[in-house]
Length: 234
Image (cartoon, rainbow, N blue to C red):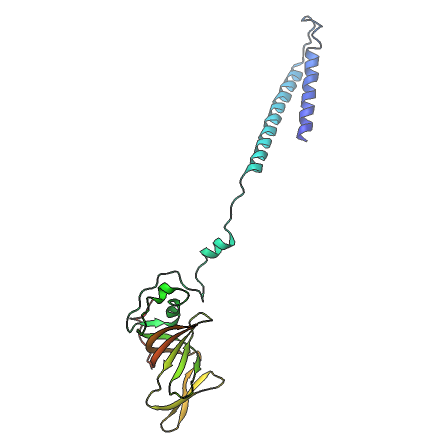
């Protein structure tokens, strides 16, 4: 449409010029006087022609700039993944403090020291006595021993904390019941009662023996009352 307007404008301009100066051979004496309205129309057509010419040049320049513009860059999936916040079951990027003797540590925090990070494991000396607070994931009752095992959740599905608990003196024995969800205790009188259940929160005190496969082991453990948070690792 724009090109057609340009052609019409040029044709009109040539016709007007032809009327004003029909031929060079006619001589200077052959002149034509234009009406004022015709002269003003000629000026308008010239202005319109200049406007169309300028608009066409601007459009061509903008089109060339868009063609050669560098497309915007977007973060890749890997970059996004790197900027994602920490989720459950993943180790934290926050530096871990060295643990102290007798310190109260959540089971999830203790697991971070051993989750694929040798530097973190060095912050937990062997035989360090700790208090570990966590949720019971299950029980084990080995044969030919009075001890029993309490397994704690760590927030990492493949990793557990095994607490080897010494049988309290007031109990005669323990056994696993209710499809593995309860630990039953028998006292000296022979009476039986539930001692612990899966999903229960407990605090266990013991000596850290390190990582064995995907299990963090605490030995010489005993169950303690729920401790305060003053000595807990944040």
